[in-house]
Length: 482
Ligand code: GLN
Image (tube, rainbow, N blue to C red):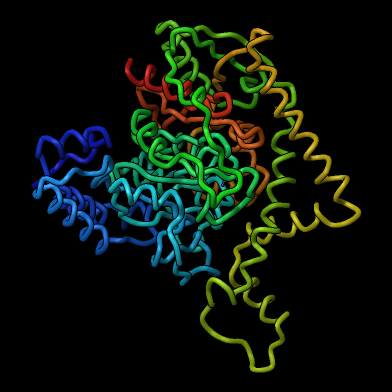
């Protein structure tokens, strides 16, 4: 059997399976064949889960043959970022310190997807502990952008985005702390959704910065992002920040009366490259033709978002990563001398186990939290975060003629070349300038590729009100239907 995997979406898979166009096993096998051919060049995966995937696929076919009802996502082949735990599978966060760490339980999102029948093809490459914007910070390999292999796939969920873009999975999961789902989706010409903070359980996600992290889908279409989001969302007692949704949040939206705001601070000429400006203007025109109203708005504290993020995020990173001492979770091969003290063990394990970017952030975070500097940096950044949040509240306030959704670029430039920004961390950090505010404010945001696809691809971002994923998804579907 030879299948065209390029056009296969979750939706089409479901239809094909129903109409007996293929079996679950055939599709899974086809994906592994394609991965074995393609991934030596792209390097999207850190590890493959072939045996368990094919076994599950076979079991699903038997169930189907017996006439049993199948769970909605039965057989959907997914790529999972390697900071999300799958029980009994190696989960590394692309770090040497976790090289041989085997997860002892399923993340809540994995448990939900297993219950829905999905199949996991493998664990994908990423920047170490999700710190980076190009996947170049992985301790293991460099993932290439399938649309142009001389360029980075974006990061930190570069492996999942590349796997979906190169047809090595129907869809995938990533995590987003400052843009790590949306920016790689944009660079690879696919769709990435960062849900509202609290919409999806983070239980079983290796924490980077806990007040910002969210898990979300990376897919080929907005429709697929919606399907996957609906499968993973919901309250979870294991994550204290997860929320119970009210019925109002679940109301379906019609795009008819929605107004989109264009924040002037995001469209400053000097910061934005020409190809990006042009592609996004065309996307706006297309939505205008579809009847969507636009309005200029202001988010005045935008200019502080990046600095604010680079204080709060490392502070949380430095606390979250203390647990990795080389003794718990994983053990780096090779022992020190018999007389090594506990402190020496920690120094050696963390010294050898963490890469330079992770160390930089731990040091930065420890500094901004230290007594004497706490008020000057960390406490101040929290206040600024509040101002950024209030900017959005005001822009969305219906009683002040506010908008329903905000449209912005995802990144100031399309995918850059390998090594272009690795020497200058600040340059790398700047590529997240448009995605970070949604994390600071906890808002849902989606990255959608402009059509026809540019080379390299360009994405635009839709930011919605808290728990109003429906609004951005509906506008996204409207755009893709044109
Ligand atoms: N690129 C950003 C950073 O380096 C965002 C990372 C993320 O969202 N995980 O922090």
